[in-house]
Amino acid sequence: MTDETKKKLEDKIIGLVKEYAGKKRFKPIDIVKEMEKEFAAEGVSKEDIKGALKEIMDDGKLVYGYAGGSFLALPE
Image (cartoon, rainbow, N blue to C red; front, side, top):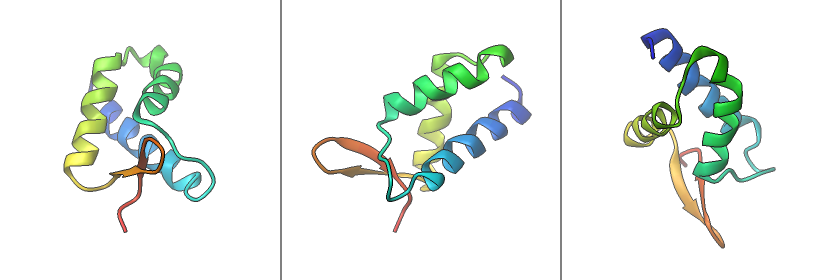
């Protein structure tokens, strides 16, 4: 995966969570499945998506929330 594709993937993940903030809670697996569909043509694997998601979490751009199950959320 190129750096450009990785950046686009990270931006898309964060944008998706921002867009649905307060409306829908995404579980990490939901994000992986959604991005798999969208980036399949660019050769992005499930492992690539999980790695990008981990980096986003490590950088503090998204955090885990818990309300009846874990989900991704924007930091407070």
